[in-house]
Length: 338
Image (cartoon, rainbow, N blue to C red; front, side, top):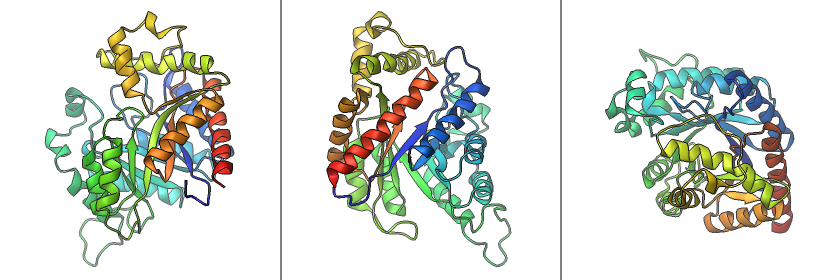
């Protein structure tokens, strides 16, 4: 790692709703984790937009960002991401302009191109299928709403205009990489659930990047799954919650985040487990030493400028502990690099 300064580590929170927990408690847990992350020196705390998913409480993403930003003081808070096809760009500018007015210099706006949901839910959101195809124009339109109003401009984003809200493009394919490069925006890759095109997307982004007002050189954030515990065995057990939730999703039956099981083979078939191993191949699961070695490997392979960690752990205390261990790992990697 060529970084003289410590590599930033950040948090992706899917605001999990564990079995036996209500949505209110899940959102209180998110704020508690954000405060913990702030104390541990994490750089940013992102929340993700998903709809019609019983196990994820952050559908109204901007509202949850406001809740988390209000209860913290220094950590950056943002969306990882807002699914732009679901929204009119003007309304996104107003929501994030409001957040930026309330919490200046702390709000990030990560944008995704997937609807993040199914067709029926998309119809309920009053969006049309073509919205995905107009993603590039929507991003450019959104950028314009944040610029100071021009003389005689008929429609203005109030709040929004003139606000400092960094835009990010999120991707799980090469499409967003190409667009982020063309627009000169920072790029975040979702390797925590879509590992296949990670290396190719980063290479395209770096190779075709055009500097912009927003960014002079390419900036790559890689998000991976992390489940850290005091021993490999305990981490693997905690990780079965995430595995079970993913299997349920693949079976078309998304649900709450289940408690861990002693052996994932009791609840998933061999082919399902092979699929999980493929999906989670960049995930760091294990003791501090195992997690450190895996993260070093990911950083060496990707040359990432920032690492983001998603941890779907049923027990809130164990989830906080996982991020504590990861913060220690970051410290050790920083020392090793120096």
